[in-house]
Length: 247
Image (cartoon, rainbow, N blue to C red; front, side, top):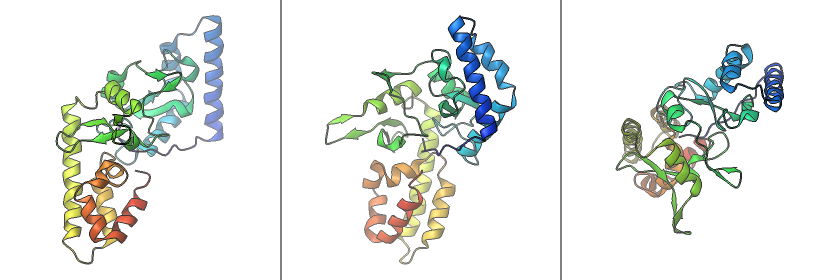
């Protein structure tokens, strides 16, 4: 999972989405709102087509799902599910790009803690503050903090809802990407005068899952070969950490 920067919709389409939400809210009050029918109707119109186009740009050239980072993102995924939370159905800030698998697995499950969401939102949260990557299994697991001797509740619930520790194909993809990242860094470690710009480019092209965030901000930063890179080439390490600050 990678951090995602949300784009702004044009004023025109933002206004039209607001009108759709106002219409849905009115129907909800009078008891005539059919969430699925309302969404199906609106989904054919230009405002939501523009939203999908913006989400694909946000997701990057591979247009990967914003939850798993593995499968191709196919459609709008509502962070707050639209059926139980219709007041957020047309809110741009509630829309992510999701894949079929994550949408099916998540469904309408949305854990809360006193009204606060316990699911990582990649356009707001830094996923690697709540999640960890296990290089041995390839799974994503809740991040453990030694200072509190506990994992984060948001990390636990995100892994549970999206089944991030039980999806074999997903784990395989993460593992393969990690191996390629390590191979690129090992080549740099063998070079007394590495080319920092070339390394950043290669790592960017290699990382399909947002693992560079884990490598330079998460627990991966305390593991070899990342620790070796920081020790032998501190300037290269710093440049990479800055380059991948939004990954």
